[in-house]
Image (cartoon, rainbow, N blue to C red; front, side, top):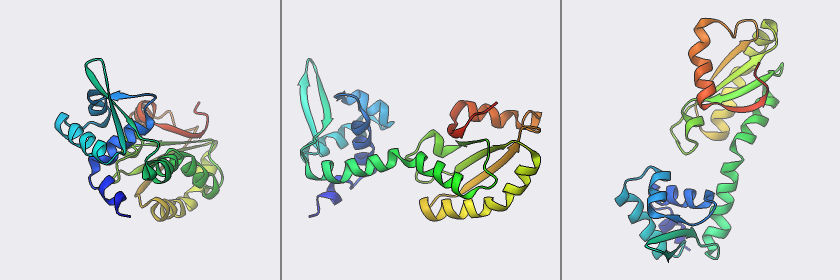
Length: 194
């Protein structure tokens, strides 16, 4: 069966399928375009191709076409849904990895950077900010950061950067930009930030 080759032949196909999977209901072509970030032509070509492969259903509603995933399509129901569900569990898996490897365990861990802004960026870099209760805990945890970087590279194929802070130094001016970025785009993996 070579249907998967055709279904995922282009990155635009995968982007459209991902958006339709996460949609709460049918989407117009313009909504698909906006959510994927594709050009109008790119989104429409991908939608037409996916409709032709029966992976996406198109129906007329008013003066617009509305698109949904075809749940009856074999590859959509058996392969893509499983893949997208696994993608949705990505940050849960990262959280478990950090908690298992980093000792002493941080008070909080936050993911930031390109990957936190857009999980579909295969070339993204994982930036982890970990907050410890004391300087001593932070220094002891440095020993496990190399193991964590290797585990992230091996498990996800992603480069990573770890920033370790403690409550005594987190308010320093040099970290203001980091905390603004964490507030803007950060994904809290576990714990609470003061």
